Image 1: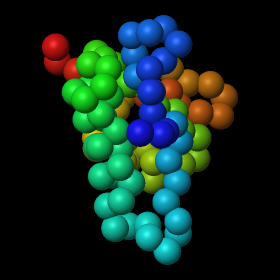
Image 2: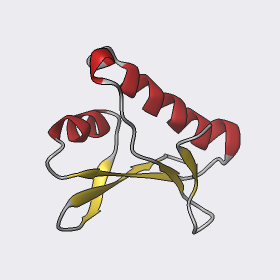
Image 3: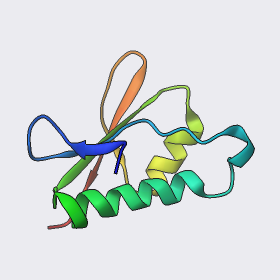
Image 4: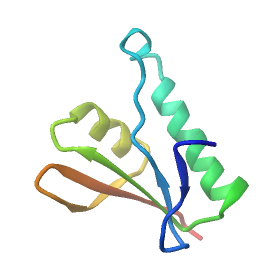
Length: 89
């Protein structure tokens, strides 16, 4: 599955930025894609305890999506938030 994988630390997973064509937004595609990547990273491939994803601070839609899926901010830079999804292993 492209767009996700094992972080350099060899322990955590990551999900690359995801973009959905404007014509297909607001149809749940991004939510389902992220959910499938979480499933892939947690269960099918790596069994990681944590998944990271980043987004620009001004992207409030991404922020709401990631928060609703359980990603919490763990750090930030001047321009972006770094979020983490932690499992309950």
